[in-house]
Length: 303
Image 1 (spheres, rainbow, N blue to C red):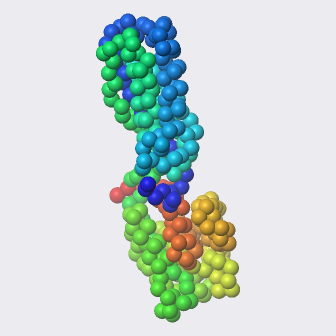
Image 2: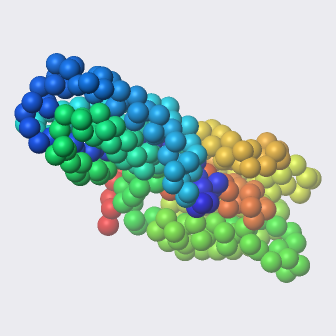
Image 3: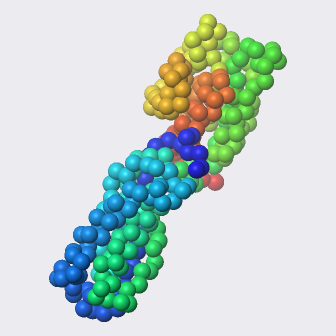
């Protein structure tokens, strides 16, 4: 199965349809009057669909098991055609469009099975996805495309050349994926004055994002939060909570991180962990959604 461990759970909705076409008006009358020999067609087919949607990962080998938190089945009769409208909702890491289409198809097939004794000309048509909502695709192209960033690695050992930087490069990779232009990438020691100097400098240069990695732990040299907090006009606790919550689902040590987020005027400042996984997971936790902040701070330009 596709790896979805890096994704965050969001509300996902999918609506699918199937069309059952009967061959004679008498079949529609029998359905409406509940005189079909095998029983109530709509009620029994709905029950079959509800059972079927829960079994989707048992039938399709690459489909992730997930919690089905809402389903609904609606019918629309138009002449000799009956449209099956099947809705599925979940709060999870991946979408439910396959589940919705499977549910609609099972409803249609059960209707076929119940109606075939009285109608030999039944056909099933147009099993398809009508709409889906939730997840990354909902946010595509809704963010500004003119954003700039500076990435600052805070590390005594890396600044001395004793260790290779991987966390900063992971941050840059995510920014480029989100179409944010990285204008500066520097490595500095864990010194409070230098950390503050770079924040002021890049903010004055008009950087939209200033992202620090390193110095958010609990050792005596971890001073990035102490350096940045006096400079922030406003903290954004929700970003900090999202980072730690995402990380805690993956390692029990994320609760020890002191990652911070806030603004200096219209510049977003982030202080992320210095480990490669910590930096990467922090970026995965909040990007690209965090870029919505610039629609508020600077307007909604897309060019």
